[in-house]
Each structure stands twice: as C-alpha cells, then as structure tokens.
Length: 185
Figure 1 (cartoon, rainbow, N blue to C red):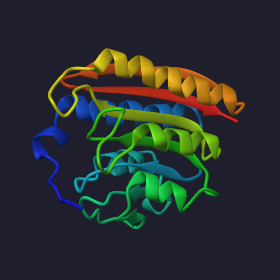
Figure 2: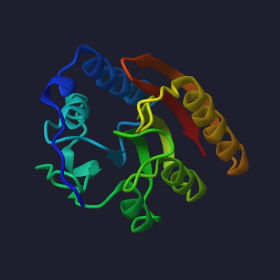
Figure 3: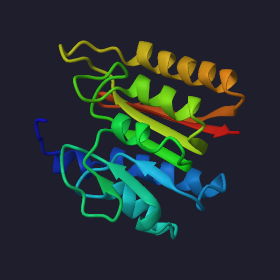
Figure 4: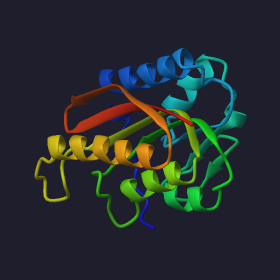
C-alpha cells in the first residue's frame, strides 16, 4: 500500500482544531466518554489528544491507519474496513472517521461500506462523526450531493437497524465537509 504523509499545515488549521473540539464536546455532552472510541487520526494525534483532554485514556482509543504509524497503544496498520471486519463484536461509544477521500472512497478506503458495517453490526452506540473530501479524484466538486447522500445513508441504516438517530452538527470548510450524528440502540 502506498504510504503518504499527512500535511502538517492541514493538521494545524483552525478548522481542523474546531472539528476536534466539536467532536470532543459532543462526546462529553452525550455521555459517551466511557467505553471504546474508534478514530482515524494522523501521526500528529490531534484527535487522540482532544479525547485525552476529557480524560479518555489512549488505551480505549482504537486507530486503524495503514498509511502511517501512529504511536499509540491501539494503533492498527489496517484500513477502517479491515479493522471493522476483524472486530465486529466490539462496540464503540464514539466513532470519528476523518477520511482523506470522498464518500465513494478510493482504492483503499470505502466510507459507505464502513458506515454500513458499523451500523448493521451495531458497533456504534453514541456519537458518530465523519469527515470527507468534497472533491473527487478529477477535482470535480461533489460536496452537496455527498452531504445529502451521507445523511440519507445513515438515516436509512439507522431506521433499518432500530437506532434512534439525530444529526447533531455539520459544516463545510475548504474542500472538506463533516457531519456528526447521534446513534442510540
């Protein structure tokens, strides 16, 4: 698998800091501090540090990332999909997946498939956030269509799998968009 480096400039952007703060605040507000947490993070560990700020130990934070080693206790060199399939009996009180691709994924990452796996296997019971690129590989902007598709997909899966759900927050910045949900069994 091709390795790439996450841009330090992007990881330190004000928007990125805001996203992590909103995620952290929602986890706390909705009582999701206890339990396990699944996140996609970079070697800078900004999301891990944000969760540590509310006393969530790194030992309860799972970080699959085959593109770069994350120096943390529960790092896995698997894609999110591979990690989920190997842990279908594990439940998470929060999930934040910061993909570097569109909703439709790429050769290695498959957000729609991962969302289906999470919800159909009842692996999430709490805050669920997902961040995606609003541009496809050809540079064509697809932000709004993908936001609606994401919300509709989560809604359909939630209803199909007897979840109570709510869209909590979301916004667009630069070429990215993020949406946070609350999914309760």
